[in-house]
Image (tube, rainbow, N blue to C red; front, side, top):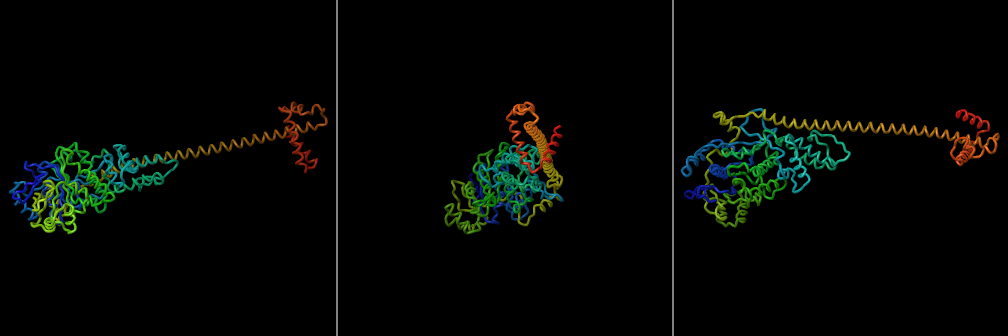
Length: 565
C-alpha cells in the first residue's frame, strides 16, 4: 500500500493506480483524538473501492457505526467535508450510508415498543466448531468437554434446538453409567443431577446456561439463522453487528463469542464472496487484551490466526483495528498489522513503550506526546516499516459520527418522523414469540421424550418388582412343597423303620422270616443293609424316648399303626 497525500496534508489509502491493496491497519490514539472519525473515513474509502464492509463488534454498546446511516450534524464535521471535497469530489460532501444492523436474539430485546430496524438473528448449533466451543468451555486441545460438544453439534438433527442438544450430550455420556436412576431437573434444561461420569454433562449445562436468557443458539432449519450468503454478496450496505440488548458488562463471554463466531464464519463462508472484504474491530484492546486469560485467550487466538491469513482469503481481506493504549493490545495482534497510524497517546509510559518497541527516537516521542498539528497521525509501514515524522490529517467520513451526547434510538426515531420509509420502526413482539415458541417446542419435545423414558423405566421397574415377587413366591411354594415331601418321606421312612423293627423283634415269626434279607423282601426295601440300619436307628430312637413307661410307648405305637393303616 502507498499513500497519496494531496499538498502533503491530507492522506488517503489509494495507491498510484487508484486502488487499495489488502492491508491490516491499526490506529493508536488517546480518547478524544478522533480515531473513530479517522477509522470511519478509511472505511468509506474501502467501501468506495468495492470492499464489503463488516463491523465485527460494538465494544461500547453505543452502536457507533450505526450512525453512518445518518448525515452529519456537527459544524466541525460539515466544515471538514466542505474543505476536503475539493480533493475527492462531491462524494465527500455530507451524506449517509446504507447500513444493516444485526443483533442476536435475546429475551431482553424490548417488545413493548417499536425499535429501529434490525436483523434479529439466530445461530445454528450445527455451525459451531472447535474455536467456538473452545471459547465457551475455556479448555484447549482434545479435551473431553470440547469433544463431546463437537460430536453433538455435528450429529444432532436439523430440528434439534438447545434442549435437544443438551440431552444429546447427556445421552452420549450417560451410556457409561450402569444401574443408576436420576431425576430430571427442568431448571437445568431437564438434565439429570450429576455424579461420576456425568461431570461433563454439568460442564455443558454451565456453558449453555447464558443461552437460556439469550436463546440465539438454534436448530439448523430456523428461518432466522444468519444468512452468510446474502451478507457476503451484499456490498451495498455496511453490515454492523451489535449486541447492545445483551450488554458486554453483563455477558462479556456471550458478546465475545459472537465476535469470534463472525470471524470464524466469515472465513468458512468465503466461497460466497464476490468482493474483497474489510473487517472492522473497534477498541481491539477490549477484545484482545495484552496477555489475555480465560475465554479472552481463545478469542485473541482466533483473531490473531485469522488476521495472519485473511489477506489472501476469498477475494482478498483487510482489517481495521483501533485502540487507545498501545501496550494494552495482545502482542501478536499488534504484530499482525502491516500499517499503523499513531496519534497522540495519553500516557507517557505508553509512549515510551511504543518508541522502545519500534526503535523510535526523541522527535517521534515528542510528536506522540504533543502533535505539532492537532489531530494528525504518524504513518508507519507504508514503505518497509518506515515512519514519516511529519503528521498527516485523514479525511473524515461523509456520514454522521457518534458523538458523546447522542443516543441511537432517539436519533433514529427523530429521522423516522421525517422519513418513515427509510427509517422504519419495528415491533419485534411477534418475532420474539416465534423464536421463543421454537425453543419451547424443543423443550416440550425433550420433556415428552424424557417423560416417555421415565414411564418406560417405571414400567420396567414394576415389571422387575413383579418378576421378583413371583420368583420369590414360586421359591417359597417350592420350599413348602419340598418341606411337605420331605415330611411325608420322613414319616414314611419312620414307619418303615418301625415295621422293620417290629418284624425283626416279632416272636411269633419263624427265625428265617426275621432275617434282614427276608424283611427287605417282605417290605419292598431294596437292600438288607438298609433294613439293618432302619432297625438300629429305630432302636436308638426308642432308647432316647425311654423316659416313657411301657404303657405310653405301647399306646404311641398303636396310634402310629393306625395312621399307617
